[in-house]
Length: 338
View 1 (tube, one colour):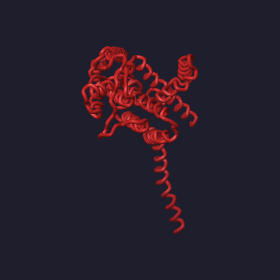
View 2: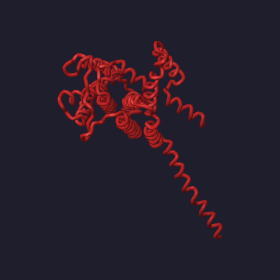
View 3: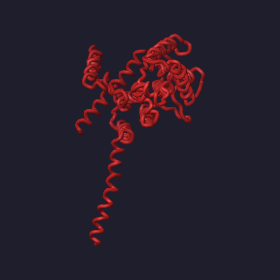
View 4: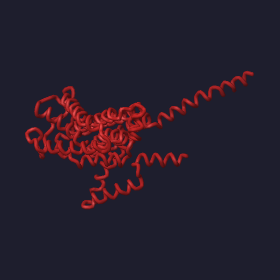
């Protein structure tokens, strides 16, 4: 009897442990827990293998582009709204903080949040009347806004330095001047991690479900009580705030900015990064920004044929990865498991 009791106790205890272990493995494999852990690990390990500051500069540029693309993917991939003027919000965040700090003597720790908040107000003012319309009116409105911002930044010589650009004061926190690629890498890497964390939590919340419903069908979403204009405006403003934050960080890191940051070409590049990595995929935005930021660095050896090779790679990738890199690989992986 004691032996039988021990066997029964072991048998009864096994099912209690197995589900817990399985749940832990599932959490590690989830984009929210395991993905964020892997991103933190990669960001922590990369500085150990970088041979010089050039690699730090490229990594910082990748992280800044990824921050913008994660916010843009919330708008394009999940809400189904196309923005062709996101470089304008990016540039306004950069110039706003630079002008407040350089021209008016504001401390950088104050000029950055004020500039980002002003960009959010502008996005709200533009998006409120536009997002109530159907179709691609937002794309046209943001395209026009981006062109206006680029022209203003180029023509206001006294304020922005005109086409030649302007110098930007360094970032000072608690009396300490932030300088050096290693320290900036830590700040921008933390900013990327927080942006991904915010986006993943947003998508898993009722807000994310409402956005996916809007992307599927605005009519069906409105029949179940979802205010399409309100939710689209909300994600549009959030996306603009993220872009402005990345722009302000870029300005104070580089120490110099030009109106090229607000160009239509830059906006198109950001959209291509989102589509290339995979729309409606937070990790796709990160991968797309990383690949398309690093790719030109490798193609420089082709010299005059660099852009031709870049375009050919984009075409081939979208033919074989029509949903973007990350969603297509996830689909192939799930098929192989089944």
